[in-house]
Amino acid sequence: MLLILRNLLKVWLLLGAFCGGMAGVGWLLGGFRPLSLFLFCGLLIGGAAYWYSERVVLGMVRARELPLGEAPGLHSTVERLAARAAVVKPRLYLIPDGHPRALSTGRGLHSSAVVLSAGLLGLATPAELEGVLAHEIAHVRHRDTLLQTAVVVLAATLVELSRIGGWLQRVLLSVLGPIAAAFVHLLVSPKREYSADAVAAGLCESPHGLADALLRLEQAGGLVEFRASPATEPLYTINPFAEEGLGALFNTHPPLEERVRRLRALDHGSDERLRAA
Image (cartoon, rainbow, N blue to C red; front, top):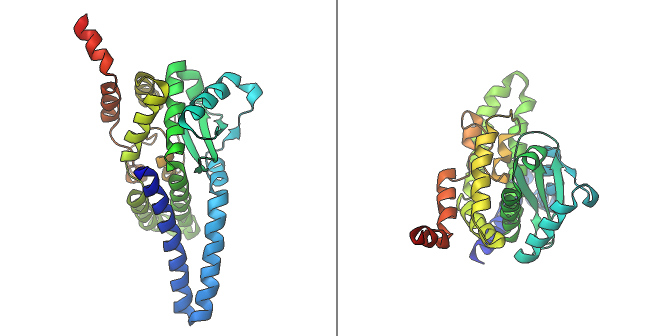
């Protein structure tokens, strides 16, 4: 509950800071009347971001909705895990490329989407796939998706603004990139992944499917070329970007080895079985 309240508070602070900034610009331009106009525009932009940022993210990753008839087993698994997590079943989307990855986005419990790549569907075992789906649904349950979606859209916008610089693009990127990354790290905590991992282990009644999936994603990810905006890094199950250049600035995930260690430690019965053997 504390994690949920913290995420909601951060979203409201983000909206307040944006509207306050817009109002400040209006005041500097001419006093109270421009302030009122800019504040109203800020509220409109904030409302639009709340309702449409999910669509923006799905467009950024080039995902298409996955119909029930195309993957009934997958939909059944998502429905079962969502029921256990007490959230509305997320919509399923597919990224039609070979890089194995998954992400979640949306406004919260009643409007969310889980996105899987074709590479992940072809690579993961059923237990691993269930673990990944449970992890993403845990993010929905904790309202991580609400915060991550808003942060990613804003950070990606800042990065893309460098393109208007023409021949000054590299200079602008060297300024806007670190600002966007600092903004992401200020609002998105690596601890969210540990919490989602623990909830996913409970939903699956075993931590090993997700632990195996994390290892498989890391091993297979380096074998397939991957290009995307580094600002989308907080959305994914693991960091799919090379930790160099701009990609290193946006890394919000804790060390994968520590995540796997914590997941394995959740299975106390395995230690007892080993001692009995």
